[in-house]
Image (cartoon, rainbow, N blue to C red; front, side, top):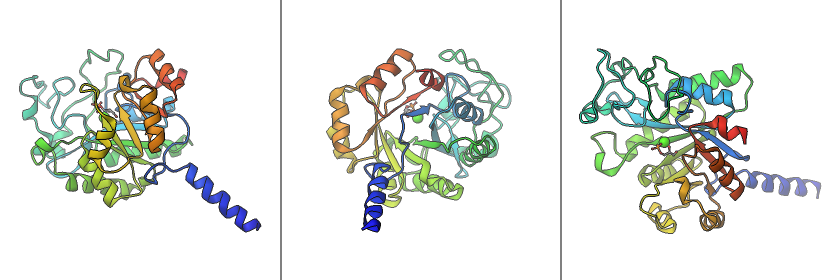
Length: 299
Ligand code: G3P
Ligand code: CA
């Protein structure tokens, strides 16, 4: 009888830690540092991830793209953005020609010669300026895990976005099967699969993860411009992801109860205003993605 009670308790406890598709996720309110902490440090760089750890995030949000030599690196765009990149010769791409500096047509040895941390960012004037390059995902994970170990911090989660879309397959990135396989190779090699969420606006890589890597959490990203029908989004995806991640102004009580019914966590992006962070938190969302995790942790 005692054993039966223990077994029942264990089953109930493990269920409470699991989400819709059986993946492990943070149990407490999830403060996710967007691109590390874009408000404070150059986005998608190792120092941005370390600063986010120092602030105390539960999850590091980051964007993944693939190079010509098939390395997974952090970058929001699959090219050298005019907003943040400086070429090795000191020139800067223009808004009209930035896409010609296509990361999927460049080897990593050339990509790492570009500085992506020194340029002043008009929208994030508080960003500390440092000479930095786009990092390999594997180096990001090593740096983060070492920092956690050295400073005896709680393990952090990784929310990794696959930056892809059907119209640019094999132009700016590999097709979904190859993209997912390259990404999952790094994650599995580094032994962090139990703390990874794969997120995307593109349902295709999420379907690959769901079918081929069923233990990995997934997050469906939803943009707000077209006033989306949430059920249609899920029907198109074809399964219930662990997390529903809409642009923050789409959050309302009806979306919250939709997510509760489907047993999905609701984690909106990108919430930078302190009052809005408080409002969403009191509404009952499960976490927020923010460029300023310091503001989120003050509330
Ligand atoms: O994680 C959600 C958010 O990062 C999606 O938007 O454009 O900043 O990658 P974006
Ligand atoms: Ca992102």
